[in-house]
Image (cartoon, rainbow, N blue to C red):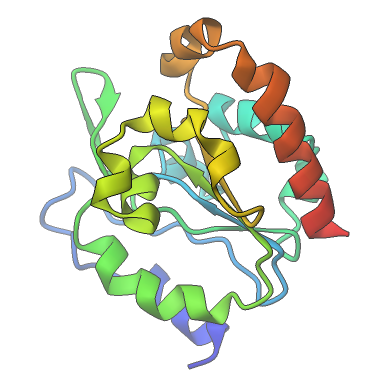
Length: 193
């Protein structure tokens, strides 16, 4: 199946309609020439409303980590965004709910093989870590996985979620900004060159 036909199918998905507190709006941002894949968790409320991935303060932080401006980031030939859940899952007590469990197994096995030009995959947050690295790796915990970023191939970068909720972790782990972020920027530049 061509990528554009699959994207149309994903955007029309209503599998979780009865479980979501709002109308489903699958957000998928891909192009067959994309060089970087961002595998995050699920869209937040602002992204659900705008239809543009990472169009929020977390996206601002992620773009800064990557060393990309908005134009380069939102050029689909550069960056593809395929979260573990394509729809905003809603909130509980002010925090976003986890991505719906149905989404990743339904779509990722069909979508990822069509992104054949991807040179760098950014695994952003625990849900992406578990899916891509397996349960054993995920049991190490997000902090330990991010701290071991050098152990992974150059084609994979394990990142914490750039949410403001992780600001405390980032302050307690200054090595992330001094060591991991420069390496991330080098890998991003190499993937796009």
